[in-house]
Image 1 (cartoon, rainbow, N blue to C red):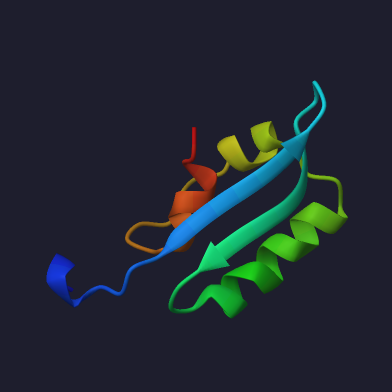
Image 2: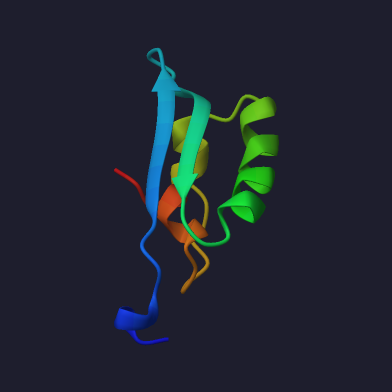
Length: 70
């Protein structure tokens, strides 16, 4: 898909404490509901930012942005 055909998206991962426990996610854009459902399971299971960082990003997808945020 050419870059000009892509819809804009925005992402935020909300972490707390020294362990950087993920307590929330914000995703705006096409397909966000599907992404939030999967990441919601990770949040409910107590995922930490380092768990997200250790995931292999599926490219090219919008969801890859959540596991490559710095």
